[in-house]
Length: 331
Image (tube, rainbow, N blue to C red; front, side):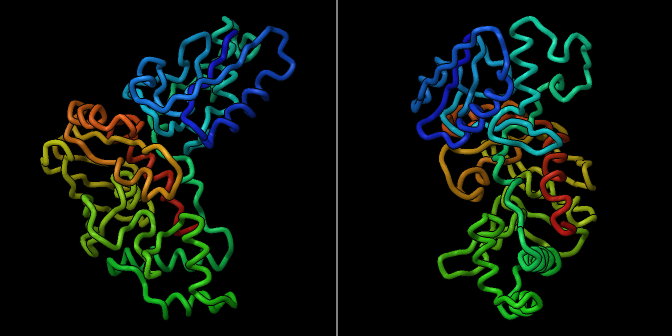
């Protein structure tokens, strides 16, 4: 069996993929050859079949190919077990793929269509894995983070320094120190002056995604998925107003928890990320947009070959938003 890892230079997720492959291949008797090919050009990515880095080819084929994936030299991310996304296929998914390539059942002959490894690739794979992983770690960080989110939801703007100092004082810390840690962990983003520029899913400055919360506060979302996740986070209906980046046509989406209704009814979401390292605000937020239909979304993707991702149904994008932000005010 030939395994080839297609990657961009310095891809941070290759080591994770290698580690999981080692886990899957441990004790295997058949001969397996593993090689790497470094690709930094969109044309070469198209020729090789690399739809984001890392892409694993098994005997020349991508077992994780999915509708909507396009050749790119950007990050590629995969569904994680239990929800969310990660930088490489899960161990279960890899085991399923390698056994399938060898013509063997992954479960020793008991085929199970509901097992984690057998479930078809999820369209959630386009979103940056570190986005969901960025969470406050200490009680002080969680309290300050919740205060920031509540201020956005209630007033449409971040809280002031005095308000954060009051919250952090209960934990014996100054608000600025906690805020700096949240920025370093990509939980919030600060501008050069140290002011709160964003706290996913909220933006302190205008974006293409305007959200009306429960008929009350108006806010801006960092991206389409962030906007879709606000209802689950706040436990109330939200109405999103955005526009197709290609045609400029207006898009309106009403969200209740994990359910969304859009005008026009053909609305889809492009879920992807640009190549490179950095906070979500810089690597993926500008790439997660609403489109009036799959045609305009694919047109946009073709014009941005360095942004890898998937065109997904509104229902899938809404579930992704709910998964990421649903517990933000309770955890």
